[in-house]
Image 1: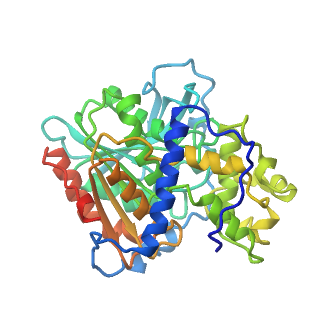
Image 2 (image 1 turned 180 degrees about the vertical axis):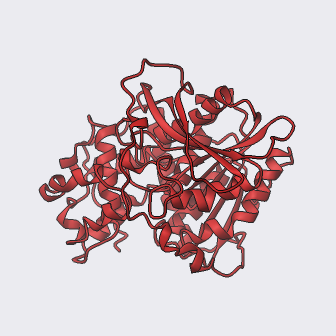
Image 3 (image 1 turned 135 degrees about the horizontal axis):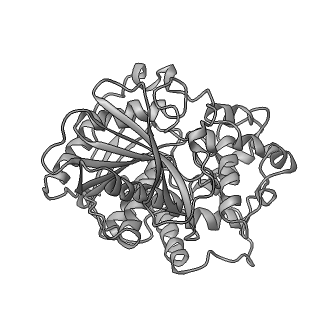
Length: 439
């Protein structure tokens, strides 16, 4: 893969607003950090455990190979705008594990233009009586399952090979078994009607926070003073954004911290795409680029159209992204190299939007637990290390853990005990650990 940046259009307009300025600085810091990390290997909190068993991480049932139909529940007919966090409707989800009760729901949130948007989600809690004060709440942001209405995790959380199955079993269920209630947004456009929001940080973060607001006004047995954010992969990106946005977007929420696992950070994405475009071999990463093209052209129509980044063949095949989920998306783009579908060179606007949608441009006013597996082939590990360095330089409180032998999904399993103990300590009001001094 090439590490050489392409020449950006000198006349290209940067993203508007002060956030873009901060984001550009953040991008520079992260990229410099990646270079430094390649040259110097600073001491890091390495967790020397064996890789998580492939019997767990490689369970065939975890793979998203099916696309469910959209149940009538999700067909919401243009409800009147309402305050973010307002419940529209809910219904039980049968078939869950013993000791849990699950409910799908639709609620109001806002998009990246501050416009009202209905979003769907899943709420799961123990069947045991709540503790004094109510169940502590975890608001969970899920990893990539797709970008369209079929791909929300609330539709089929208990069915193997469906979008919600892996997230429920690997992340939601272990948290509920710890005695927490869990609310998980589907994200805008994934379940309830709406434009795609894949890796649009403002939307993901707002959806994650507004899910908490909804539970607070809807459920009576939740402790409103105890909330933690949790996310892996795309969800790690979302949880970092939610943590960054919380103090300005939802200042009334009492949130004790954010768990960020193998986050899908974006600054290197255009450079990675440039490298892949030089290859004559098909790439599994093409599906990710197609999903981003679908979402960003919808979220930023004045800045990027599908034909801005995609070839005619890519534009012609883009509708498939809005029809199927998981592996069914990626399989559609394995007929040829990425250059069959994506233009070269990558346009300057792709760099601009990648920068705008990278978290960490502002200080995050809550502690963070972060973990990264170094054998991750989905997320660039060095980028997470650089992101940690950036967070530390900005004065954030970060408890960062490196798993040398773990893959993208393996780090979820191997970091579970540390993450859950960290959450327990936050709910008990203990001081948050900070290992930034070890970097």
